[in-house]
Each structure stands twice: as C-alpha cells, then as structure tokens.
Image: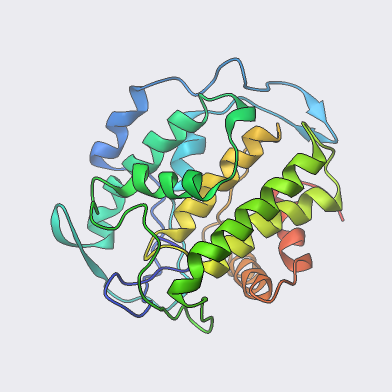
Length: 267
C-alpha cells in the first residue's frame, strides 16, 4: 500500500489515488533471493481461532501496495533515477520493500525488537538506493497531511523514542504467542496508528508501517493479513481512513475494529 499519509519531499503533503496491485519490472528480480518459508513459519496450526500459514513472497509483495488518502494528483519526486512520477517509481519501491521483507522473515522472531534504529533501518534499507540523501532519516521540516498536522519535525526523535519504548513494553508484557485479546488488538492499533500520526519520514511512512506490522505479526506468531482495504470497496476504505483519523487523537477502538476484521474475528 504510496503511503496513506504521504508527503512531497519538497514540502506539503500531496498524493495520488493509485493502487499498485502487482510488482513490475525489476521488482520481481528480488523474489529469488531466499524462500520466505522456513523454520519459523507456522503452517496448519489453529490458535485462538486463527489459522496460520507459511509466509510467502506474495505476503511481502502486498506490503508495497499503495492506497492514497487524498484526491488524485500527479506527483513527482527527485530520485537517483532522476525526477520520476510515483507510478514510475512504484516497481523500484516495491523491489526495496520485498528485499527488506525477505530479510525480516528469515530472522528469528525474538530478534525483531522495536527501536528507533530498527524503524529507520526499514526505511533506509528499502528506499536508500533511490533516495540516498534522506532515506532512513527523520523528516527535517513540518508537513500537513490532509486534515492532520503531524508533530513538529524537531519533536520527532523524542516522540519516536517514546513510541518504540511504549510499543516494546506492550509487546514484552504480552509475552510470546499471546492470545488474541483486546490488549493485543490495541497494541497492533497503537503500533499502526501512532507511527502514522507521528509521520517520522518525509515519505513512504505507510510502507514502513506495513513492514513493521508484518514483522510484529511474525514475532507474535500471528498470520499475515492484508493491510490494504479491498480494491473498489469504498466503505472499507473510508472505515480504515476514519479509523486512522481517530488514532490521531489516541482513540483506538475504530482501528481495533479494523484489526478484528483483518484477523477474521467476529465481534
């Protein structure tokens, strides 16, 4: 999913309303690096009413799908390939995401600790080849994202440190393979909503959030889920975007409801 909250590198947030549902061109070349299934895959087990399955390449592909929060516009950005539109960069962005996800899903789940360095590395490793001057670095300017104004840029380092410490504390308290309770759903909602609200990077915050969420699901021994609303389902899309807006004000129940649906849990 370009970010739900995606800024132009040169200032104010802009967007398109495109969804890139498949990888194109060179994005496929990374798929042969390593198999995603392995000793840490959970196949065929049913725990807490959720059937788990082996992580596959397609799970990594979906992390890079795009969903926009704003009306469609043409966006261009300066990259190592020159000034390109986001649609032109989409396969290269997807390639970076797949590369990072292959690496993440071949680590031991217990090694996936949430720290500012870890989150910055997700951004840098995925997008550093395209944007070497700012990938992996917190934004250096204030931005506006639709009706949401993220915190001032100079507050981002402290807020990200607090976010990571809070999230890691929640995860540690729940322990390994926790049951799917409201506590876990709130933790996943906090992980997603708070990161997007802080909006730490100039761009591609949505992709970073989805990479992080996928790593958390893997760590918690939960199945991978589709983190993008179904294409063409406007009700689902609006429900998700409204839930993110509520998360800007630390109101987690709407996003918890979205997570219940993602995990196939009946209310």
